[in-house]
Image (cartoon, rainbow, N blue to C red):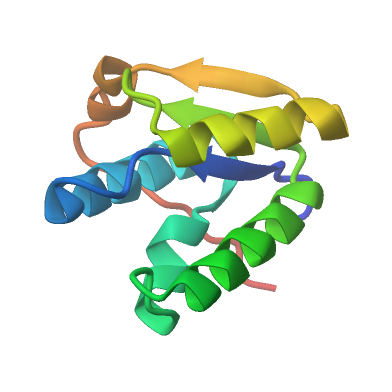
Length: 120
């Protein structure tokens, strides 16, 4: 699917981790429905790295910034901006990456995801 914009999805992770993971997944589904290719590092790196270990956390943050640098846009999902998201927003601004704010209502407006695939 050439031409899909790569979208960095930023949403809270800490706190209600289970609920925040479900919301990040919904934000990714919303992105796909909008024709984007979502990247949500906070769904990936906590599965590989220990977020409570300062060294591993810094590694995850560094890798996240690297992923952000190759994205076409950043989408801020939901109404709450965490300290980690603030740092990501600052980095996106520094890199000149467009930022779009997506409300929880918009994200939850996609009732049943419909994905299309073109087989080559």
